[in-house]
Image (tube, rainbow, N blue to C red; front, side, top):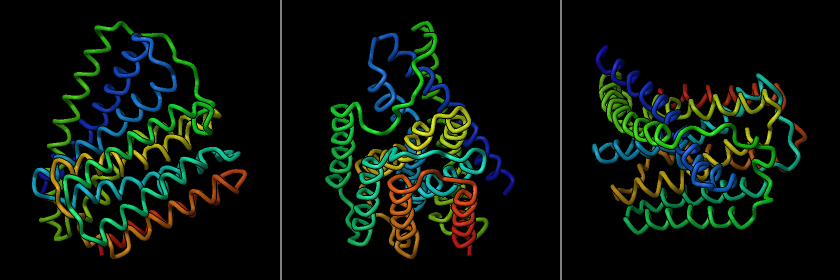
Length: 308
């Protein structure tokens, strides 16, 4: 048991450090190459911050553990909407002004699509490719709507790092992500067997929370710095990437049907949280501490249910 826990912890550290290095390196490379802020934030940073979840899900699928792979996708989105948004609002209420409304609609449609795929028990490389085409369509749309309402308050890039050092950061981060992902999945599978819980439950909780820690830190920092659009954009963007990019890559590489046990309540909760998120960004003036507490309570309840 100790070995499984140590493997999981080491994997989480590897994913956290690797993800940070990958983001820093990729952003710096993009700046050096003269890539626009929009493309850097949307494509480069969006892809890089999704790498911990992607590596963990693909490693799990290849290891024959689709429950961990897809549990991570669903659990990461629940963590984004309930844990990250709730914790951020507790630290600093998040002012809203319609920020992220259109992207929240995309996230809701993606969540409903994932639910439908699971209910139909369709597992195919073509479904995976379709999801990947979906993320490409989303990136194309965002690129052609640069004045859309997510991330408009983002800071300008800071001092650039030497290109060689940036490449070293990028490659080092990528290596740590792969190594950390292997350790985390190995430890997670062992923990599921030791504690007698399903691999899906481990994916929904341990793996999902661990791979979402970078987004948690980023959203809290953005809210504290008075950048609500960045905090909201981080959450909704990650939710879209998780389903379309990570889900698509996972099913393309390991075309298994999404575990049916996610239909018990998790996917319904995912859709409900997406609806609630859309309602908040469309109607509310802010996400205050009271709402943050409610979101955290809902997330805690989900964790308890997952292990019962």
